[in-house]
Image (cartoon, rainbow, N blue to C red):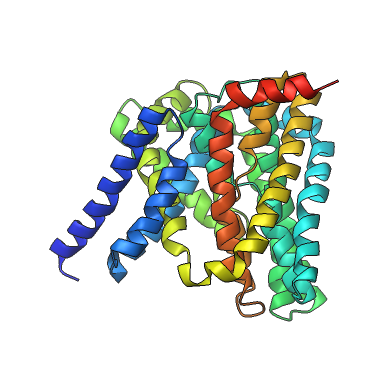
Length: 383
């Protein structure tokens, strides 16, 4: 593709995102829903070449990583440790309420057992990237309910460190030994990264804290990408690897890194969301819209209940409970990944997951924005 055409197509995509961001600012909402809609419109109006699509896919992955890294910068290792310990029961409730509907739906739709288990994974996982974007856009990173949201997302990623290696080995027809090896490697990698972040975070912060802003940016970005890449190769979420790097950094270096990374995060986060709209196979939407809508409503309610319950246990009042519940509703990048594992096993799983993710990613951010309007209605219904 000529370089001029590449620039034109990428420039068009970014200008559409800029217009969506401006519209969101006037409406007072997070731009996520408008970015998703922009992706669908771009798919209809603009036939992107291979090079722009490759850039968008790569940029989307980078966006998810930077979103989780900057979220990790908001918390210390001790806060994370205490938070996870206090919310273990909430993690079990989350697994039961949100994995089960997908599993049952898969059985009712005639999926094979592994396909039904994959759909359970699709409905289980909150999108950490979308949740962190909502918290950032709406200025809620310091709210009392935010640690509960964070704990749910991290506990889900821990479950994924067990779930993904097992499912991958079963889909490949691997032996029990292969399943065990994959599981051990994933858990060992996650445990080692978690230990290093907790134990040597202060040392890492001192090493990274150089006077030059340019050297700091390059050093931090390089470290995030290395850890994220290693995590992905070891079957652990790349985003959770980046999150642990953010947790490890503290003090002045964390504050400086946040200011350095935020412009890059905002650019690639927008690309991350528009990718969902671009990936949606519009021709398959009529076939899966009804089950996707039913699942979105059902698991939106169950995920809302998880956030509401967790925030209530933390002593948060009605409005904060509402914010926690709605922020956890969106599913995202991991759900698409899980559906992709079963593309050859259950072809309808991919389109169903894509429409389901799109619906929850639209519903969650919109409901999260209107906490002042809807939370009092729930408060009146409480005995």
